[in-house]
Length: 485
Image 1 (cartoon, rainbow, N blue to C red):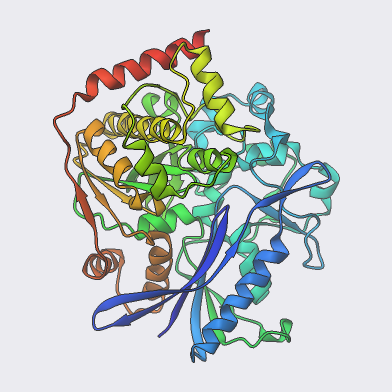
Image 2: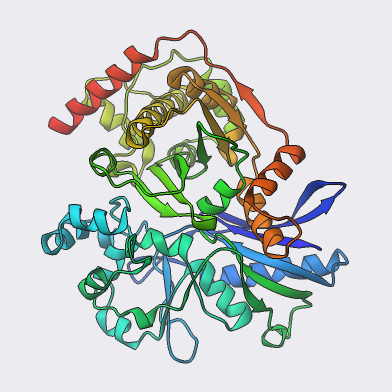
């Protein structure tokens, strides 16, 4: 059987073919395309037509490779949605989570329902762009005219098959699913003028969605495809594709965002989790992803965009290695770094405000970013141990950040834990594994993870004799100063 993972992130998407060969999973990227939001009528929006077109172009390439049939799973980023009318057409292009419309919405919502109540209900962290707050600001007439609300990957699956479902891994990020009822929360729906009927049936990853309706796409030469609803939130797929085993491991899905957490059989909504804004997203096979959203490589991507000359990420690492470590301490989780007009200027201004050395060169800026991400990761691991009461002795880094030797070693040094990097393509691999389980080619998640351990290289980073406590304390001192001045 041939499996195709459609994996779409905020900046790019790709189609990856997977085949089980000689008891190993072999994968090959066959199509890649750009993604990004654009401004339209003073809103930042996604070109959903472009994404659908690129998926179809990728499936044409599957057939050109000689595969007449395949199964397909789609994963994307979370929180954003499509409003569909009773004719099956979208009412507007989906608005990006980086749009400014929800800038002050969290405060408005929590005047009606306290943060404590929302967190106990949902277990989801408070981020300004959560879908709950997007719905609060949405055009109410448009919501009234909406027949179906679909998360981005569910909408793409709907376009391909005509069947609409709500995958729980992505829908949980809306901050509207109730942990006890395992359904949409009526009180939160009322708050944003919605009813449960607007949302299709909730399903678990591994549910077969249906056959690709090739008749709807007569201008494409497509294979026969069975579409499977995988863990449609890309982080959920990435965790499935992480080679963790036994106890004592955490994951770091490192890309535009850094998602650092543990896989658990139960959610954690205790005081420590609430106060430190940890989230309990629903995972594949009835698991919970207890994790922290960290701004991630978005910061260095934006630094790169505003430099006068282009630097690839290998060059950033090379230049950063020439610099003295830990000359600046910056909390990149501060909302000011979410989408500043110029990331370099925002970093420099933060340093001026906190009386720190101002980074100027590419090397100084890269060192600043990597050093502080490692510190933030180390603090998150400490928090997770306290929240769960379970020790963590190793961290698995997957995604694009697994390439970054400097950041991985810094993370090992500051956290005091062994870091394993890889596989790079964990999201696509997790997507493929769920399809394989749905097709009964492998039996369960444990067997799937053993398959990926046998199939892909993982690199190991051992902590040095560094003194992380002093560095972490200095970071916390500067962050406290920044918050109080």
